[in-house]
Image (tube, rainbow, N blue to C red; front, side):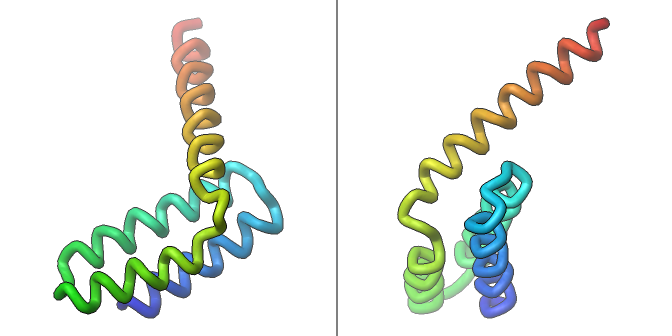
Length: 86
């Protein structure tokens, strides 16, 4: 499963680099969360290697991607609440 999750993350990062849209960045965030959850249940050597590989797959500006994605999601939630109130 580790290889599958790492491959999913790699594909998501490649797509996000090309498109730089919120949907693609959101997919990266989902892949990171799944991989972190998976690694949490593994023995220490697998955790260490998995996190090491994940760190190499993620771009240096991943924190900026995440912040931008969170900001966009936050504004979408406010809009949907406002639209529902009409």
